[in-house]
Length: 269
Ligand SMILES: [Zn+2]
Ligand SMILES: [Zn+2]
Image 1 (cartoon, rainbow, N blue to C red):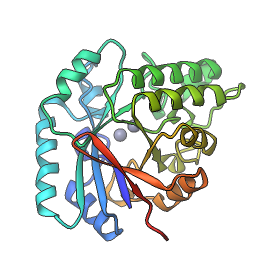
Image 2: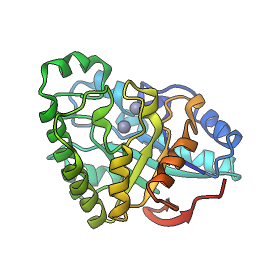
Image 3: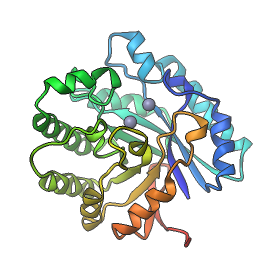
């Protein structure tokens, strides 16, 4: 099995040595892993905040070097070089330029920022109480759609992250799910099944099963990820992610190399 969503302590809010992430992945019997370090938040002027949320720009080449070194050191497991990029409207060209120097296997796009509102950050839970939840959901999915339509990314990370703290809208999300699924298909993108929601107040995998079934209907391929921010979290709940995938009708997952993917069948239990 695979885990494509591993972080590193270089981003300021994860911990542990990258080598220990790899060792734990081997121990857990994973065949393929990918580091998806938070890409530098170059648009944030508050450098302290930026270095607590992402890998600082000057350290990014070191991150890449470390992944490539680990690949040589542990040939028994496939180690992919990825990153997780925060999509911020208006920075498309800048993101493209900054991704260019590196030989990524995949680039994840994600939405954590709705303008000034860091909706998935624990410091912003109180802000949620003040906001119109329906509007936050509409903003989130419209930003996610914009993120997909840039064509800059291969995988959309944790597609319904907005539910993290368990706030839900009054309206049905079916239409928005379809809109996202259609855009992913059109842009030949992959959706991530991310188990970290199980460790958060919502206690549910991203995306929800309803959403995943719609993604499946639109033939959007999937990857699996734990969103590990420590070595102990590597491979966490991937069996549940696989069950979720199978329940939605998936028989295959996407394996990336050089920003292209091929579909591999899930191993039989
Ligand atoms: Zn993180
Ligand atoms: Zn994320």
